[in-house]
Image 1 (spheres, helix red, strand yellow):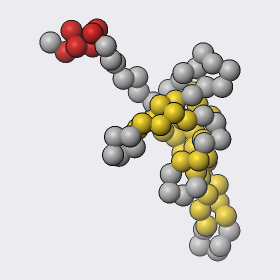
Image 2 (image 1 turned 120 degrees about the vertical axis):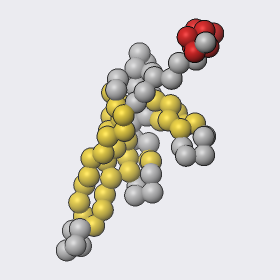
Image 3 (image 1 turned 90 degrees about the vertical axis):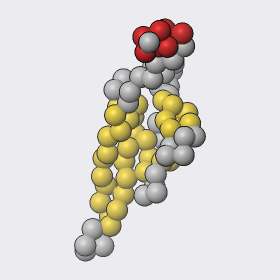
Image 4 (image 1 turned 90 degrees about the horizontal axis):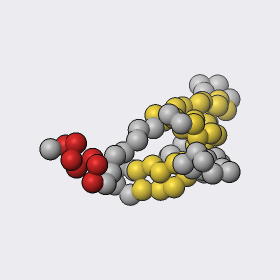
Length: 78
């Protein structure tokens, strides 16, 4: 949802539960934080310790797909 003051996205976990997220939302087992929501992806910043014990910042990308719903999608599937 990009037309709002603060972009939002609906994501689904492995069990099928859906969540509405915004920038700053905590996500994932490594303490990730959503940095930005763009039309085709979500950028997540995670932290991990390297071999020397130094905290490293990793940026990961979650691609977004548009789910079709409603009567239009059922007629296309037939």
